Image 1 (cartoon, one colour):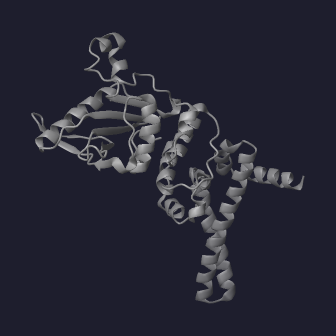
Image 2 (cartoon, one colour):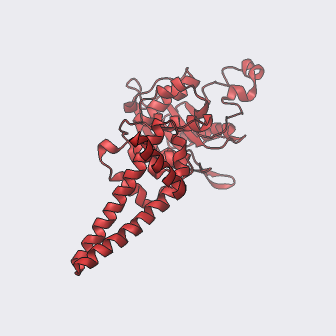
Image 3 (cartoon, one colour):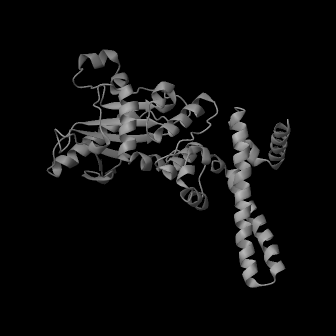
Length: 331
């Protein structure tokens, strides 16, 4: 995954996704935090400019949510979220600074001061080795001397790849597939994809691609957007999670266009050419998707899903696996 990527922010801006992550992942790490409902969350502006002695400075968080329960409609808690793909020594110490800057802005604007808790969602492939709370940062001895000053819930690091499977499976939103992939990458086990329909299909697919270190092209994103609702599952994203697949798709379009030109030329008229090109491209895309889906289903049945990327990168491997499938179908 890239060092900095905003795709995680887009999916977490959805209140139902954020509430699911907070209640089932963050609270599992810091159970003293309150349970929230999606309807009680209000998205707050991220960018904050502050006029200091050194000039105008900008404080940025990936996401701010204000919890506004029925008994406190103006707010009871601010949740500041930051997404990380690499562990940095100073990250956990940066969050209290953000909280102080946000409190200053609220007071200067005449708003209501609210307590703030900081959350770091860690998507990295390596285990988070540093402290995960301020209590761990200062050490038990110092923290126990001033327990009221160093709340364990002030900063919480959620190392997604280190969470137990039962915690990840407790998620009820699309984020469960994201957490599953992070866990699989950390554990070096195949991720096979869920068949259930995703509510935020394209946004989830973009995060999954970012985790895999792949940038989906505009054309690929458009094809994902145009999929039928019943096909909007992580299982259908597999063919797009490979740069080689993008190259193969382009080649298929070129070959299909040539096939269409030949069909059109046989008709001998411009209309026939245009129609032939259109049919050829459609046929090429359909055949390519069918082949990839067939290979993917076969590999998943054999528990060999991780081989898909390698097969898509090599025409020889593709020929071999298709022959293997043909043999299995005959036997």
